[in-house]
Amino acid sequence: MNHGSIPVDQMTPFFRKLHGLGNDYLVADSLGGVDLSPKLVAAICDRHTGLGSDGILESVPSESADYGLRIYNPDGSEAEKSGNGLRIFAYWLVTHREAPSHFTVETLGGLVHCEVEGSIVTVDMGRASADPEAVPLAADTPLIDSELPDLGGLRATAIGIGNPHCVLFFDEALDSLPWREWGPLIEEHPLFPNRTNVQFVNLLAPDRLELRIWERGAGETQASGSSASAACAAAVGNGLCEPGRIEALMPGGTLEVWVNESGDVRIRGPVEEVGAMHLHPDWISRRT
Image 1 (cartoon, rainbow, N blue to C red):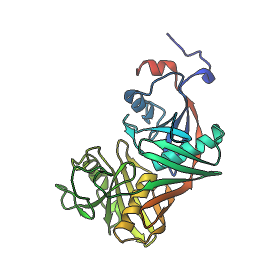
Image 2 (image 1 turned 45 degrees about the vertical axis):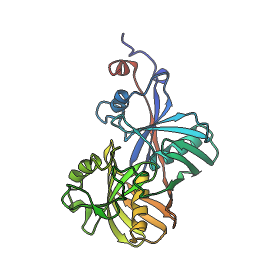
Image 3 (image 1 turned 90 degrees about the vertical axis):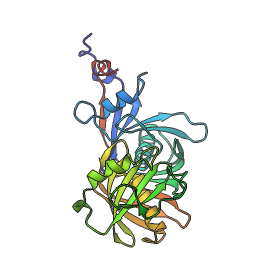
């Protein structure tokens, strides 16, 4: 059946597209009964034949927080936590769901506190940990500035902050390194049973880091709140930075990160709404 005559405003699902420092997500404003299966999520996120994004955010009920959030990677898998995803979701809640300026959100990676001040959103990301169970690691001992097996001597620090991260520090300019080749190898390394996000980091100053990011299920991204959190926490834990405010410079822009002596992390940065998009029923029928 040809649905071409359906008015655009009657098409569902309906998504709003927002980004935090170039890390873009689609917020499911109205799904119209459509189930976000892994296959459909991957099709929607495709930048050529879909709507295109680094992931999808879906509001769900929560019994322990003011709001609940499911986070989908562009390969259709689910993420436990996303710093920029949370900042985008918080901004959407305030601008389109009349949420207050302070509230809590439950994710698979734990409960977080959010604050929205205009276009600037702050999220308390929780406590970063190198404990093998917190990452998680397929090992009994933490990976702290240690060699990754079978990767040519690359040294890394594994951090869990509700989702897994592998942080590698370099003195060289990051774009002189083959980090795009290393990213997928580290993401799928057997040391990480749930795969991992990967951060390549250059210390520019005691309170400034430069990052390149390879995200689990997404690949190269312009920015990542949880990646910035993990990189800054690893820098403090390895004695490269003092606890306090650290600037995380990413290709999409700069995120403010605070890490205290206990490893608790808070991030702050801008969110921008790009626009809104509908999916055509014929398009959905060909992909479900």
